[in-house]
Length: 452
Image 1: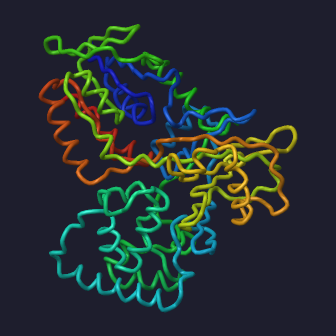
Image 2: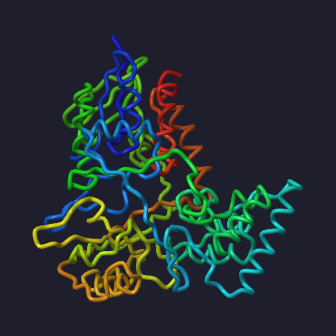
Image 3: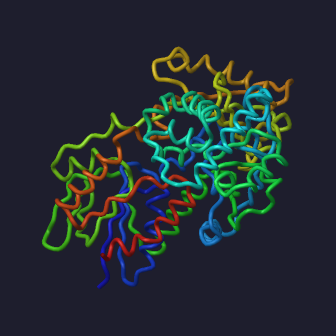
């Protein structure tokens, strides 16, 4: 008889781990989640008659192997996403680019940025540079004091926390991983002049040409990402995975060389529990010790607006990222168009992620926020100037992008050590991989971890 595994968490990370575990001959897999649906944050909600993702949750830049799996699950009903991205900064729009473009800054500022970059490149060849202690330090180590300060300001406007208080690796969860401050030909020449500069600078993809073999796809069933979530659950069930959804875990205890997990409906004796979510407080409580990292994580609250208008008035693009510190919106997507949703009246929708501090005036009055958001969409060219708002919905999301504050890694290492001491049969998965591609690649090692 094969081994029994319990995957705690039925989001995309849990799916990827289960996808690897079902390859083990004879393995029996259970998936447990307190939510009654499969897919976690990927599972779309309903706004009027539309299925709406809470953010941009497409299969963006994934490996061909994962794309083939998604396509199989969807019975071929996927569409290739040819990204048409836009970014905004300093009142300037850059087509075909999704990172901050500082090329609209005054010439003397851009000259200073270039000079600082060249000094950094010269120092990089000598080695021995100190490791940045925080994200602000990393920005300056990569881009120099001038551009680093600008990026720190952008970060604070989106995430509402000082970059000095955040771990350097938070950069992996942002769109601030490369710098563009000149026109494309000048950026390409500067990148080519030094390996350090090539690693930290950017140019628009159309200027770079094909840079990888990754693909981007999206479900083509008119149900947004919910279409994949529903079918992925059935696909796993057809391969013997037992879904225990809508169930809280009541206890976890060792039973000889196995571990017993109880929910309100199931008692499962397993060889390994794979804990795939970041709810460390719940896990610590189940194992009988205190642990709380809530003060070491910044959750980035947002208002999430769905704006319904005539499809013909929506710009032909994928999404726009607004890096203007005074902007009301951050990421706006033509989600209704790329998800293939146009109603009988010719209406579709855009979605807007709007960083908003809890207890701010806008947070406390979400019903009034759509007016300003709609006007900014017009100003950014996302919808036509003569577009009319047919309907809308604004949600308050208190926890979206999570970034780790200083000291988080030390606490997590202590937590993992304590979990290992109390229950060797439980594997706490590293929560750092953020993009779907990275989560999938990280899952390729789960069978080795489970059999170690």
